Length: 150
Image 1: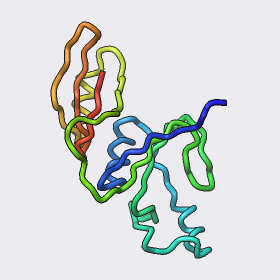
Image 2: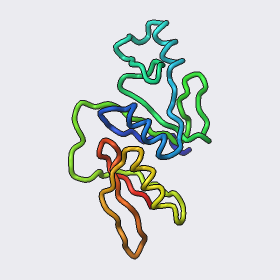
Image 3: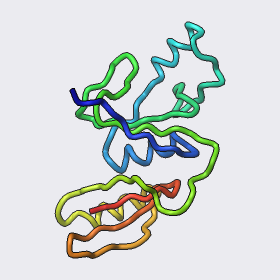
Image 4: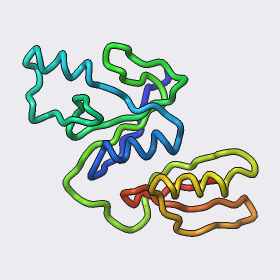
């Protein structure tokens, strides 16, 4: 039986990262406010675990995005399919290059427009690559994590 998985990315600001990647990938930012409200009311979590994002309670150190076509738990808004979880960690990203990164595939002829859109969202361009196997642009998200646009 295949294992369920999610990609977890360490970061300084999980809500900023979730907002960037949701916009970049056209994914949904998970809204855990109903779950958090229930857990607070039951005394299962304390206020120090929570912050406010867009006027709603959110986990202080966690945020996630999910593919809009995949199943999710309506009681918690947690994705049950393709999902990226951003978790706050105290240390900054260390150089050099990431050992694991996302490749974004916008489709034939759409790379330049996608790169421009991602730059407008806060990404930076590092360099373009042209090799016999293909061409792509290496970029960084707002916290410096590398990714490629093919």
